[in-house]
Each structure stands twice: as C-alpha cells, then as structure tokens.
Image (cartoon, rainbow over all chains, first blue to last red; front, side, top):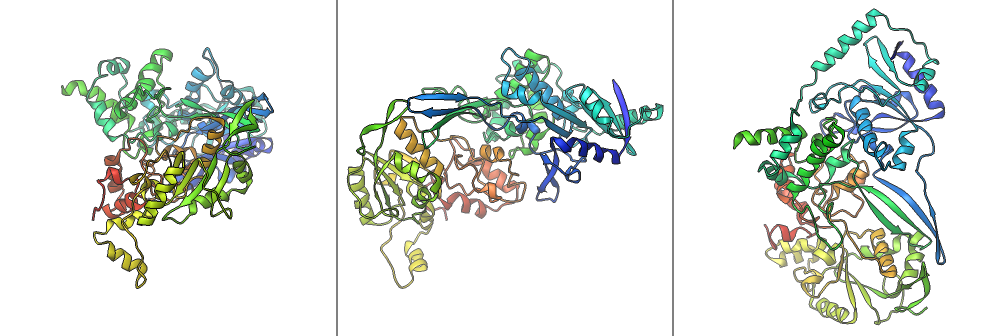
Length: 349
Length: 265
C-alpha cells in the first residue's frame, strides 16, 4: 500500500485538477431542516468551496449516479411496420466521486458482487462503475449509524484514494495508478513515524465515537428461527409501505421495467425503475395475485434479503449500517431496533 | 379515417383504435379539462389519438354521438343528475375525470356542515342558488374508470388515450407519493416542518406538490391499503394538530371512506 500526507490547502488544488476535465460528484448542502441542521446531497460540483467535506451523511446515497431511479434500458424508433432498437448504457464520461464515506464505498463493493461479478452482470451498471474514480474520505460517526457492527466502517478496496483528516494535514491511502498520478500534481510527502502514530490515534478516536451497535452474531440462523415471530407483525403495523427505506438505501437495487410508447407513436422505450419490496405491488404478478399482500411480510422479506439471503450467497450482509433508512423512516423503523427485537423475541416467549 | 373505427393508421402494423370522445363538466372549476389542453407540445398528438366530438372548452358545436365520456365535476343539483344519467346512457365508457368527479373534490367540503344553508348563505349571500350536498359520479351512475388528481396529470390522461389506441391495459400506481418524491430527490416535507399526506396518497402525480416544497393534500385519494393510523401518529409526533390533519384528509374527499363518511364535525 502506498501512503502520502499533504497540506490541507493542497486538496483544493487536487480538486481543481480533477475538475478541469471531469465531472465531479461531491457532498453539498441543499437546505436546512426544521431544526436548522444542514441537509446534504451528492450533486455535481464545479467549485471546491461548494464541497462540504465535513458532511454528516447525505439523505440519499450516491446510488442515483450509477443506479438511477429511472433509466432507459433501450429505446425504439418506429417507422411504418418496422422498428429499430437502440441501446445506450447512459454514460458519456467518467464520474469522479469526491468525499465518499466508507459506508458508501462498501455499498458499491456489495453492489459489485451482484451487478458486476455475478453470472449476469448488468452492463448499465458496469459501464458506469468501471469508469469511476473515487476519492474516499473519513467520516464523523453519527448517532444513527451502525456501520461498525456491519463491518463497513472502513473501506479496504473499491476506491482510488482515501483521505483521512489528521487535523493539521491529510493522510492519503493510494490504491490506483490513476490516483498516484493525479497526486503527482500536488505537493505530497512520505509519511513519517509521527504521521503513522497520529493516523492510528485519529482512527482509534473515531472508533470510539460509534455509539449505535447491533449484534449480528448468528443472525441468519436467528432470522430462520424467528420467521413466524409476532414481532414482524408489530413492525408491519407501523410500516407505511412507502418505499422510502429502499429509495435511501445505498444497496437496494431491485427494480421493475416499464414499457411505454411515445404519444407521437414514433418511439417507444423500456425503462428501468428502482422499486421497493415494501411497496404493495412489488410481488403482484400477472393475473393479479399478490405473493406478499401483508405489510409485515413485505417488511420481513426486506430484512431477509439484506441480512439472510445475501449473507448466504456472499458471506456478508447487504446492509452497510449507514442508518439512512431509519433516519428517513417516518414511522421510526430502524434496522438496529428491528434486529434487536427479533433477537429478543425468543427470550420473551 | 372515420372516428370510432379502426382505420389506416397503424402502430407496428396493428390498426389503432380511435374512439369518439366527449368532455363534460358538472360542479367544478373545469381545470382538469384545461389541463388536457394545456400542454401544446403534445396536444396535436393527443388529438390524433382520439376524435373529440364534444368539448365545450375547446370547440364550438358538438355531437352527442360518442363512445367515451370524460366527465369532470361533482353532482350538486337535480338537473345535473338527469344530465349525467343521459351521458351514461350514451357513453359506452364513462370516465370520472379528476378528484371532483371521483371523490367530490373541494366541493364536498360543504358536506361537513350539518346545515347546508349556512354554507349557501356564506357563499352566495343574498343570491341563493339550488345546491344540494355534493355527490360523486359513482353515487349516481356506474363509473368505468377514474382518473385522480386536482387537477389531473396531463401525462396520465395522454397515456390513457394512448393505451386505448394501442390496446394496452391502463394501470395506476398502487403505492404512495413518497416513492416518487424520493425519486425526485426532494427533502422530506416533515423534515422541513410541513405536514404532508404523501405517505398515504396514491402516486402518479410525480410528487407534483412536494417538488415545490409544498406538502401533499391527498388530491389523488388514498394509495392501496394506506396506513392511516400510522399517518395520524406521525402528524401528531411532528406537532400538527388534529385540525391540520383533518383539513388535509377532508379537503378532496378521497379519504372519506377511510374516516367514516359524512359529517365529522
């Protein structure tokens, strides 16, 4: 592994070099909530001063840039009785993510397993993912994130460079040639023993700041055992079936496909729309039968996909513990509480 | 090509069906019909899919020979009942256009009053008119299709016309507005300190109001199996009074069947 340190003002220079010829996505403030707290989002940035590197978390993940909520998979040109199919992977240039937190980098790594390295890779995702440059950034633990319990508090791969704030300067971990070459444009130095000590101190301090934890020991088995638990009904009663948890989830990738004809009848399109397993029509099939008519069933299966099915397939959970779903859920359904209640439901019997 | 017949115009070799359609209005602002005329970039395409034979807002004259009647407005007078029944008899398909036709719309707010004369006096003063409690189209005749919204979403009406022409089924979202709102990357209205009925209201409007940072008033009526109990709890938790909640739920009448019909105050 290659490490460097650099003075803080150098980061602006790095940004400007990257921005000169590339599209940069970074965290920006988009408003204030009712308590006056800033609301952050990932957006296109051209000015370094707009980047909020000390952001807590964005409401929506960076997902929309590589798994858009709505994406045309193919379009059709219709002339008389014939048609011409056109396919675009909807990417015209590389994307640079500037300031992704470890949870969001880990989310990409998890998505890669399904959408890139599986039997049927998704070319629309691959085209974007393989033209990506990621500058990771350490985070400030929030009261609702439980990434440490999910093993997503640090990113081991899936980025080009990862920056840690040492207070007086930045420490950077370099994982790609591209990152190494870009860094040649700013003043960096080899970290010394002091920097290593400081880095470890900073990391240890951050580790202690994670306050939300969830016990995932044996969770796949416990979920099997508690499939009929009454607890699911209680959570189901609260659930609005609004799909917000999936929309704000950095790893939810389920979708539906809409086929529409243009009103002038000269074109048609096949559009992929991200869906949510909590929506009432998620498991509705032709003929009208609904395999998951109950709210509690839909909510339960979302947990089974994240914390059981995916674990059995890939030996890791499909949850990074960012806590966005719980924060956005108007009914206050949070992952740690649901999992705790399932673990505890056996004890209360 | 003659209206109402399959003619020479085809889509991928399959002849299109071009129905004769008529537009009518009862007690309403006629804004839904206006919406249909509103989007000029697609108006001609829309008009080539259907043969409009009666549309007071758009044309002079008109024929009583139609297959599909798009009916806007709620029913508040006896003469309206008679006229609606006549339309029903003539039309093969009757479409309730907009929330007034579907749920009574804003007009049904007057049904809140125990004494309707109080409402009449407030609105019409010394020039009273005949006005009965508001009824929906369905209260009087069979309705084949409901297009929700106050006003209706133009794109949705266009899609319906298109699907009739090419023989594709007409489907509405069953899930609530939140899904579209998140898709549009809005900040949750509750987070901004605004009440919103998005979590229980039927999607399909592309979160029209929340996109402008205005909370949803539920004009499209309830989504399939909305969680009303939780919605009320959330409103309370965020500090909104019961009156605020009721004002929104009662505004367009879509939720009346879920709150016990008729007068609540």
